[in-house]
Length: 393
Image 1 (cartoon, rainbow, N blue to C red):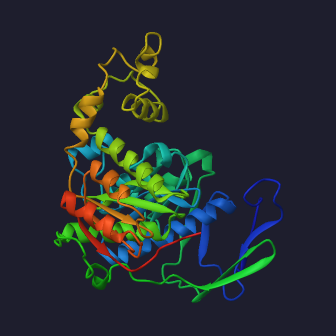
Image 2 (image 1 turned 30 degrees about the vertical axis):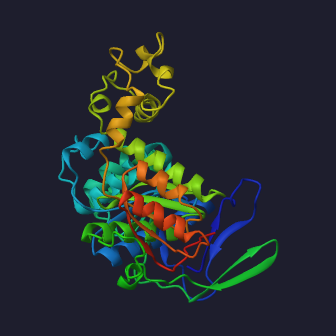
């Protein structure tokens, strides 16, 4: 099959719409549903991300994509009891495989942003992963294969309309890529830079020069995630998963703040008060996620006020005070941070430090590199100048 007609493009008024290849056949097969224009953009971008993560780390990888940027990305490290609980996968009756753990991490990093996501899996989708996908609000999944059990589970999702795409893992596109804007064709070489190259971490201008093996792995995950994130972008990673992604901001510091706030929320969800929230039986997953998000914010009264809390809780919880939040966030350490371009000022490092960042990888090359380095030295942060920019548009 050389082409596939679509219902419409980005918006319903944009017709006709299709995907096609000029030579050969499409490297994908639709096994369920009817994916649209944006679905395929998310699917093909996210597939590249997880394929590259798998190649770089040797571990199964998953991504949760929304509007052509990842909401989460992770490799398949086992889940601690705490993570299994805050990701709401501690009740699954079958053992969680590495690819299932990767998806639970990718989806769990930012559950608000992942609502209605498109999922990418580096490995065959198995029963455990399909069971996790089935219970979430999602538009579709792309993977190199599916077990019979997984395919049966996914084909029952959304009354049989769930989008299931199988991709040819051996497919490699041409080295030159093109796209059109306003009738004008743009052409460039594909971004084939290897982000697991040890040379990227050789230029370390900070006093602290030690990167642990885990820190290097997490920085590689961060950089690969940024490679497929709409720029400007910054990504915080801990223990093999993105915990905060700031995408598409015009200002670098706004990326760092946005991603840092998401990383803080991820960490706050592990606070004993949050893990012990007395939700009413049968609360919808989306309502529960939204309630947690508000509870840990400064707008907590929106869910704790009289007449409001009864909708969500069996009893009114005590608020999580600003001081409690500050003390808890201070316990988050050894976070890795990547930036898709240089930090222009040290304010980015100041904000990153507040969210436990100890390792940074960024392009370098700002006229104020000296200020950025000095700020890292102030906090004992190890920073590598990779010399590689990772803009993606």
